[in-house]
Amino acid sequence: MTRLPALPDSLMSLEINYTPLISLPTLPASLTELSIKNTSLISLPTLSDRLEYLSIVETPLISLPTLPASLTELSMENTSLTRLPTLPDSLTNLKIINTPLISLPTLPDRLEFLLIFETPLISLPTLPASLTELSIKNTPLISLPTLSDRLEYLSIVKTPLISLPTLPASLTELSMENTSLTRLPALPDRLTTLFIENTPLTSPPLLPDRLESLCIEDTDLTSLSELPRKLESFKVINTRLTRLPALPDSLTSLWIQNTLLTGLPALPDSLTNLLIQSTPLTSSPALPDRLMRLSIFFHPVDPPAGAAGQPDGTAYP
Image (cartoon, rainbow, N blue to C red):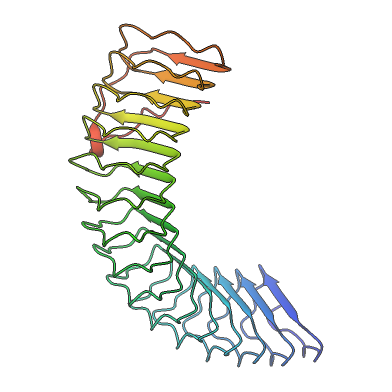
């Protein structure tokens, strides 16, 4: 099927998947959702003034029609778009994946969620004050604009970022993976989750008191600052750390893999999960009575390679 018949005036949702359509008929004014995946479409007809959701995936679209003022969610994945039309003020969610955009239009004031993966963007426009989640992956960005004071989640992956702007007090989750950052700005007091992987930090950040989950993987850090008293989960993987700070009484899970540690600090009574792999410990502290899961692997591996290194490929529980 390369064409559809006329669509009924009552139609509210239209989903087209894995169909070699080359064109669409006139879209009814009643349509509120349009989802297109793996088709041969390169353009769309005029969109309904009531459309709220638009998703285009695995489709060689080269242009979009005017976006209606009713639209709240827009998702473009694996398309041939190089530009977007003006984004409506109603838009709250914008997702762009593997689409060759050279720039973004002005972002609407109500936007709350922005995801940009695998695009050639070299800069972002001003971020709206309403933004609460920002995810960026596999882009050439080296810096970010000022972050929203409402931002709660920030993730940067496979992006050569060399600096971060001031982190807002609202931020609760921060993830930096495969970046060029050598330092982090001050971490906000509300931060509960911090993930750092393959990022060449030269000095350990001061960790906020509310932090509950901390993962440090593939970095050149040789020391850490004091661990927060509320920390529950702590992972140290493929690093050059030679010692750990005191472990807090709140800790329930500890994962040590491919490090230079020869000893561990006292294990808190709260600990229920402990994994130690490819780490040259010469002694171990007493195991806590509440420990429910203990995994120990001591097979020979290459020493940690730091920020440029790779894990050994072994699967662990």
